[in-house]
Image 1 (cartoon, rainbow, N blue to C red):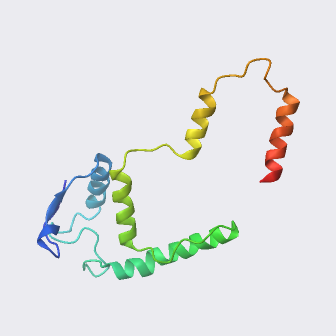
Image 2: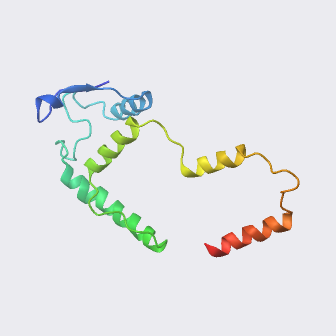
Image 3: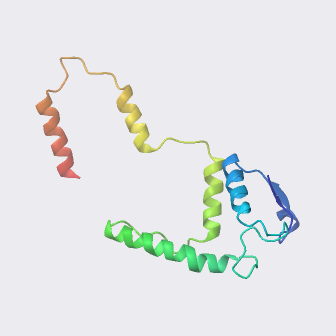
Length: 141
């Protein structure tokens, strides 16, 4: 559990549950900072101060979005919107962990393929018919 003892508002002072994996990662990170005091920021700047969102957005997120957009442009994909911030990641994470797990479109399609009953022998395609159909599908995409 993470104890948030200092926040901008009273509502921000709280206890936050964490996964065992995150707990282990944070303990391993903390071990690398054995000289840090308990009341110091967990992820301080080089000068030991608390981080704020502006440098993170400008120095980490914006360059990552630019790099991702360069790759997306090469693939002829739409760019990622320029309005992504650290708070965007927080909202996305909260959304993902609060929704029940859903199978992707691909896994649904694979599952449907596996559970489909075989056609009767009278309606089964020959292998050459299936190959022709597959070729036709690929050429239209």
